Amino acid sequence: MKNFVEMTNKSLAFFTICLLAFLVLCVSWQVISRYVLDAPSTETDELARYLFMWVAMIGAAYTTGQHRHLAIELLMMKLTGIKKSIIGLIIQAAIISFSSIVLLYGGSLLVLSTLENGQITPVLGWQMGYIYLCLPVSGILMIFYALVDVISIVQHFSGQPPVMSENHSLER
Image (cartoon, rainbow, N blue to C red; front, side):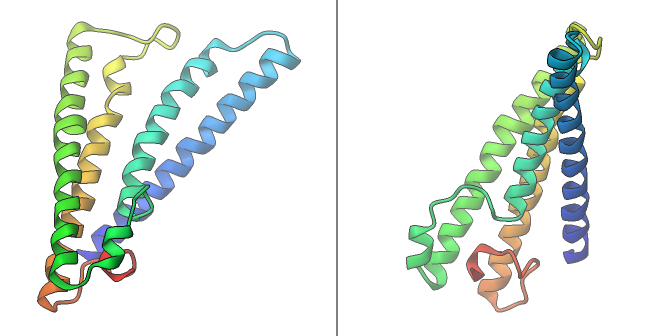
């Protein structure tokens, strides 16, 4: 399981870096074409918007898996033992609930409805459903990372070695 999580981390990091690099290239070309060539590129303008959505959502999932998301850990720092484990489980349950309802379910409905309606992007002519696919993909990844954390919390409390020892919030 640990190898699968590490492989997922590396794949997400690589994918996000590639998306971000392509986004930087698009925005750079947009600036050059607008201010130097005086002929703005509409394709890169639209593409940059959609790349930003994907970078933000996939980056949020990766950040969740790395435990580097915005968090107020004052309560977690003061607790120990079973109380800390219970709060950790409640936090992971909240992440799973939000990711399941908003990102996975809501995002899937959005993807399906835009694909059914045939909505396309104005300049590139792409199906908007594929653009919105970043929502359920991000939701699946966040649920995966939350479940890994739940397993780690349970294993930590039961005395077993955790699934992900270097990033686990109970061990920080």
